[in-house]
Image (cartoon, rainbow, N blue to C red; front, side, top):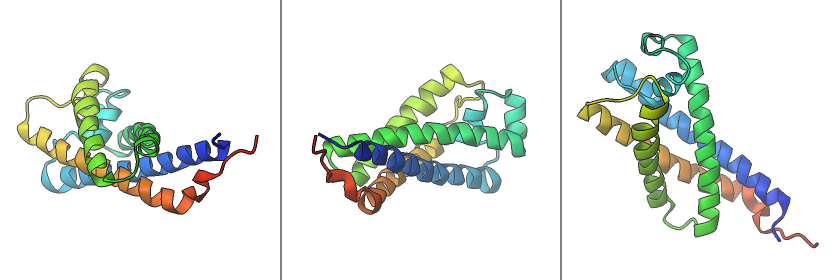
Length: 165
């Protein structure tokens, strides 16, 4: 039997990995908005559109940024925990490739499909928008699995402990 500690470690490692990957992705998005292409719809803006109006989101400012970032962090944590469980089930070999696959799935599912169903701010009709988002989601997935494996090596030493019950 697996110990409860292992399950808790999966939550902690997954949450931390999700936070790291979300910060990487959102930092790329903010750099793109402020240095390259201001109308870029990063995940912070789309997440903010779950609660705020499109005008509030695109106007920017501290509070729309914080609201969108908090929602995006929660999504990243959920994906991070799921990813750790996937890596524990199917192995950590080729984790960079697995991370790329997870990033591409999040791009297709969350960015392209769920954003249109749930948010008032979503991407429409821009090839540049789609390609930049594709790359930021690829960075998300790779940094997610990389940080999960790195944290697992440092924090997950108790992973193989068995219950004596």
